[in-house]
Length: 199
Image (cartoon, rainbow, N blue to C red; front, side, top):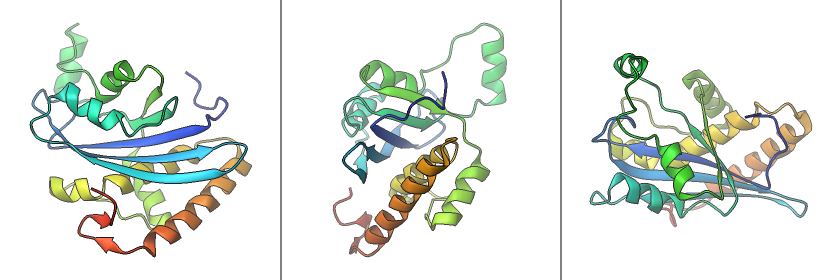
């Protein structure tokens, strides 16, 4: 699929926080953040959405809950999971994946969405977070801290994706809109988990 095709009206960068690696059968989603950019002929609007996932939900039900945050017809970008060496050996022997990826489940639940798992180096995420003052959770942070930062992770993912676009004018325009939006977000009162309407 061509990454550089005509940009959609709505792009949603989605970050799902789990209690362990996505491809572990026992892995459980605990929270998700969606950064939604609507860029049409009228205006460019930015919005952040978060969801807490109840422990009782199955993997399928958790993704269904998260999918409710995604606007109809959106292009959804998600970080593709890293494949552990043991899993690569497992797959090379012709064995099936132990569980479907979040992107696969989401694509089945939401056929209207254009779900695109993307490989993004950690260095790129860290660089864009530094550039734009985005506070991401660290790899060694506890799951609760990662959940609190799920919206920041989605924002960083969107910006990395934005800067992979060949259209410099679009990159500059939307990056400027992001900077203005984030300045307004920082000026808002904070609750225990971030801006007061979140979680």
